[in-house]
Image (cartoon, rainbow, N blue to C red):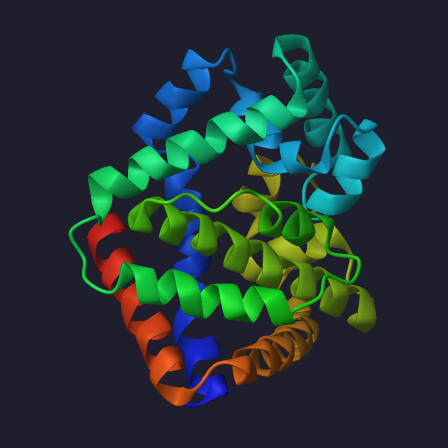
Length: 243
């Protein structure tokens, strides 16, 4: 499998899996066990790897969300505990989700090893969330290590995508509207009026092409059989978790 093929095959399912596991019952329950409920279950869970920083740092890292939503979630995280503890709690929940969902799959060790090679080679450049998640301890359990790798892959591509949006001059709210529509933009905390999605799609496609090109590059660090295994594993997990 070529770098282009694995990048194309994994882009959509990795994003969709993130939307699934962040809001999975077992993850929410784990966060609650550690004292984090509501918005901190996402903002603190995802952004806690940034450390106990000012909310402006998290707003910048999240990029596509309304600053007001991120600031609220971050302040609530600090009220409920420390941001690093929120990220650590999420990592525990992520491992539990993995155990419940796909621990029976073969080849998880190989997936974790292949993706770690990718991460070791992909040096973060203005990709704080990717850097933070890449630095998280890798669990001994193969399923939990695989789930962590999925989260790191998600943040790696997200970081590239934010770079690409900046390169084509696309505002965060317009990027959300172009990709997912006005309703999703409202869920991200943005307010009407919104631009016509169709008028934004051409520029957004340019950003996607830049993003894909960067992901193609990072997959050059593993061989064809490893790329095929990464794509197959992501596909198998998505088939289970997203059905």
